[in-house]
Length: 167
Image (tube, rainbow, N blue to C red; front, side, top):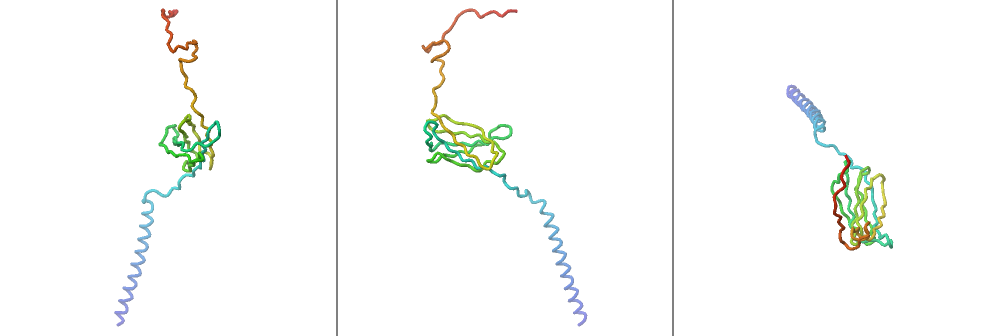
């Protein structure tokens, strides 16, 4: 009877040691795997909120349905993609995904108005931009009011030998 009591104590002790060993072993493997599990979480960069208003330069009235296109520009000045938004009935739109410190090229296209374009640096938490769109101006023509005063639309030609170059 004493022998069986001794045997049960040693088997109980064996299970305790085995359990302790498994706990220590699993903890070591958990720490070892933690370094090899790929990328660690990196918080996204802070972004700037941009509110844009598109209005007519002549009257100050809003221009609805204007295309507002954002082109992110990298450090080398190269455009990396584009995102297009449309203005609402009040001529407004907003964007809040431009990382602070980056450069964005803003382009606005509205039917019946000159296209607008400019580069902006995201250097604050928020920025409000008001764009005053103008009607297209007349195109430059060499046929109207050029330096020679010729209004006929014909090019003037002169014939003769070119001036010789002095040696």
